[in-house]
Length: 390
Ligand SMILES: Cc1ncc(COP(=O)(O)O)c(C=O)c1O
Image (cartoon, rainbow, N blue to C red; front, side, top):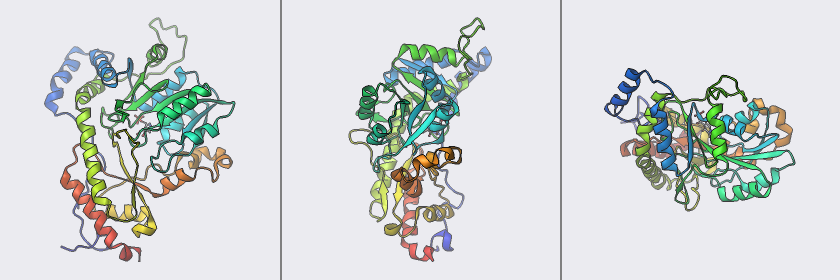
């Protein structure tokens, strides 16, 4: 077999390409009875499965109020709405677009701040520096499942009388000092889209310890209708269907197993990639556990011999898809051009991570053999770096 990387005429071990991510779904037999029940009863929405799912999540997160919603993006929208946020919201720039788009969509101003170079999560010091009289909230994100410095952020929010919310899209499976996410700040929103540990196709969960927020969103996700069609609030349809809730209900008992499996995959990646110069790992916050919704590395082009983009191209030729999250970051996206002058040269870490980080494939049921083949491909590319560079 030709041992060269496929990019320069060799062969790939994955000629048909492995998936970048895959939902780990229950076997069909586990869903069969519930599906039959939903179809035969005709209760395809607003039925018992959503209630059961919300109760299961609430127990798991040790958080009193949980709501299944149509997706995380709309969940964030609803949570900001429930909190009556005005003016400016501080948000990391190194995050998925939904985090800041919802702020913009609500007619508020996203104020992008930089993140910590090792953990990739929002930098509390930069948050404090960005506070103005217009600031009314801070939004933090568990980046790739790694929780931010919540303690410091809650402290800042408390001292400045700001609301604090978590975009916990990646947080199912995350532990913050031994505790599941879900009850921090004024509320959190999880995603259960296809790439997440709990995957319901589309979907999200809002969790909060505040009853009034829960009560508001319960009506808001119902168009604002309390039942008499005479709304006091203009709401949206933010509900989660029974089919999605059933999938979620079956996934909840398996979440811990999935998080452990991903942590094991991440450990294998780390142990095997660590010998190669120029591969730097995301630091998981001390005392915490990442869900490893994603496995991220930073590529130092000088030491590795190739830059992130060339490595991604070479891996793709090997049949290994990767992702460049979050590139470009929020403050450099076209829609936020209007804030350009405000951020030029001020989010150095974000721009560094956006340019140099790469996400390798990970999913909960990924086999050790697949991880090994991916590691082998990275090693092969590293060895042939000078030839690839030519
Ligand atoms: C950090 C972050 N926030 C929000 C979302 C949006 O989630 P959803 O697709 O459920 O709307 C995502 C999606 O992956 C995300 O990564």
